[in-house]
Length: 135
Image 1 (tube, rainbow, N blue to C red):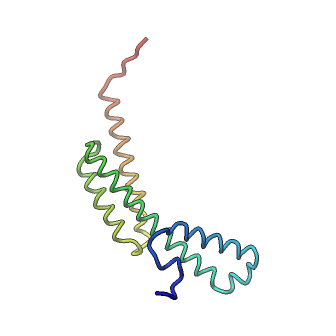
Image 2: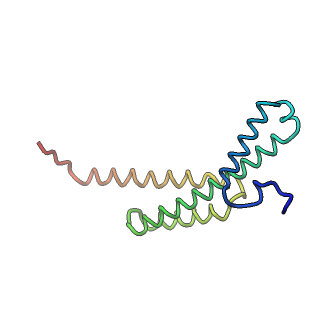
């Protein structure tokens, strides 16, 4: 493991490493753009940055889903089925990193489902409770 690039050895600090790789790639491109693209380093660094940032983003979205599901479970603001679905999808996100890029669409779909629930529940409360105007 001693010969592996620094960005691929540890799990921690993925975003600064990806940012460092991107900065180095841009600096090299500014100086010697034709040699960089012809050498294959550009493709390698771009693939490494994509893997690092994608894995980090998917993990963080899974953690966010778990924390919001826990808050909604304790405060009882979402139906239990949506809370359980949030836990299941979050665990799926945390365990399936790297299987497919389609896995990254789980989080936006979950955000859409929670947003629709919030909008529908707000519309129901407005139609049920009459508006009282104070003069």
